[in-house]
Figure 1 (cartoon, helix red, strand yellow):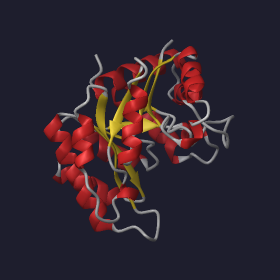
Figure 2 (cartoon, rainbow, N blue to C red; figure 1 turned 135 degrees about the horizontal axis):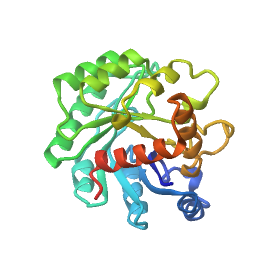
Figure 3 (cartoon, rainbow, N blue to C red; figure 1 turned 90 degrees about the vertical axis):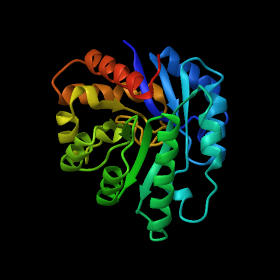
Length: 253
C-alpha cells in the first residue's frame, strides 16, 4: 500500500531539529510522495530546497492570503515556479478569519497568482477560510486552466458541490477524524473518488488519536482509514485512489 500526502509543511520551524529523520520515517511508513507547500517567498524557497533533496518530495510556491493584506512583490512566484520540482502554485486564496483582513488586496493577489499559474501551465492549491462565496466568484471569473484543489476542505457539502462543478478537487485532512467534524463526514462520503485527495497540513491538524500533537505525513493513514470507513470501502482502495489522483493533479510522471 502506498500513500501520497498532497499538502505538508516540512518547511515549518516545527521540523527544524529533526526534519531529515521525520522525512525518512514517512517514507518508511509507506508515504511514497509528499508535496511541501510554500506560502511566502521564504517558505517557498525552503519548500523547493527541501524537495530537491528527495526523489519523493515536490514543492509548491506562492503567497498565502495572510501575506497579501498589503503590497507584495510576486516576482518570486514566477521565478521559483520554473523549477521542475515545483508542481503547483500555492497555497494561495482568501482568508477572512481575522479582523485585520483586507479583502481587496487578498483578491487582487489571488487573481494575479492564478494568472501566473495559467501562464506556466501549473495547477493551484487553494486556501479558503470563511470566504466561500467570494472564493467561488473569483474561480468562476478566473478559470484555472490546469485545475485546482481546495486544500484542507472545511466547508459544507453544498460548497463542495460547487467546487466540483468547476472541476476542482477536494482535499481532506485530519479534521475529518475529529469528533466535531459533522459536516465533513458528509463531504467525505459524497466526493467522487476521482476528485478526492488527502493531506496532513502537517505540522498542524494531527488526526485522531494523535490530535494536539505535532502532525507529519506518517499519520495520514489515519485520515485515509476514516474516509474508507465513511465510504464503506477498504483503506487500500482509498490509499491507491488518492495516490493516483494526486499524481494526476500535480502532473507527476
